[in-house]
Amino acid sequence: MTTYDLSRSSRPLDWIKAARKVFDTFPEKVKDRATAALTVAAEGGKADIAKPLKGLGPGVFQIAIRYRTDAWRVVYVTELAGRLWVVHAFRKKSKMGIRTPKPEIDLIAARLARLKREVLS
Image 1 (spheres, rainbow, N blue to C red):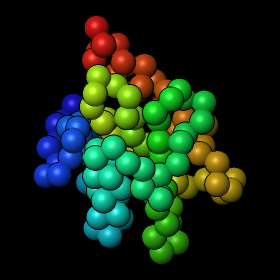
Image 2 (image 1 turned 30 degrees about the vertical axis):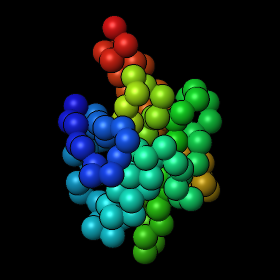
Image 3 (image 1 turned 90 degrees about the vertical axis):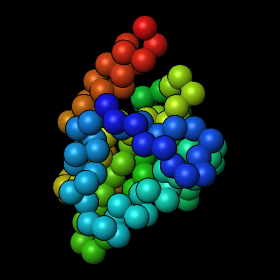
Image 4 (image 1 turned 120 degrees about the vertical axis):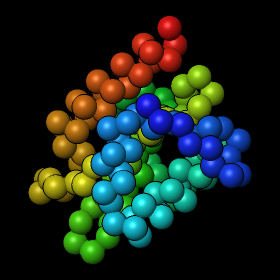
């Protein structure tokens, strides 16, 4: 896990290492938009491009960014030990519409469960 302190944030921003590694491969424009949305979240707000991710509990949000012909996603949780955690980042490849693919949901759920055990124990 990696911790980053945003300049104006009221809460620290932490990353699951695997999520940060994938995020770092995103195009610069996508990273800039996602970082801006994460900054809004860290300051207690919700960016227009962030939506609740249903079925994973309260405080779990997905940032959705379209860039060129691709869709990029960053998933974060706001309600965990007073910190904002980025738990997953991925390039959406599904041809099934706007739904987040089940393998991605399963991975997010597993990471959230592990993170809760580590942070809250």
